[in-house]
Length: 247
Image (tube, rainbow, N blue to C red):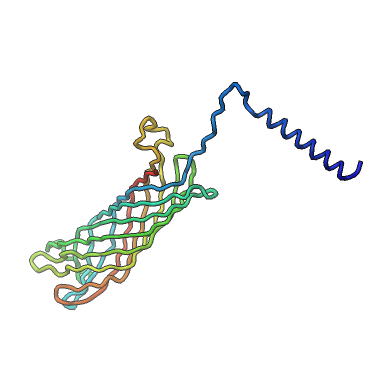
């Protein structure tokens, strides 16, 4: 038998064996066959983020002096909408837009390191309006637990609103916008993936998040009430709570 005939015989034997195996795997015709439905992990989502903020000091110049401002614990809340691209190997990338508003009240003003809040009442606050394009990588550990890392770039409008000292005057009341960014890390939790609230659709395709955010923006330019011009930076460390619901 020539080589061609041997190869043909081997091919036909392999094809017959494969077909026989496939036939064994097919359910009998009198039994219904349920299709295997794979869950879709990609899609659009909406959500929100709320944070407890710890702002670093800001500062401004007035009457030839540098005033440093310390803040109470603040807040930041945002709405966001994005797209989850689904599994890409062992990670899942997301891209989203975020718009938010935050603020913190003045704890004390100090001049050249000398505190003034203990005996004279400092007042005012810092308010921000922020917008970002965010990117994240989810790292599924289980179906319910999904750590994530990422961040965003965008803008921040910072307002040093009616800051001053009681009995003296409002020293600063101005705002400016600058480039801003944030870095995030945390964990997403699928409650229904944990076996909770499975009888309701309210939490279907919903991920709750807890994490950390570092936010920074540089070189805001302000003019004090006396006409003094100066600049300051903004940084904050935040504990974040949020959710996102996929459609």
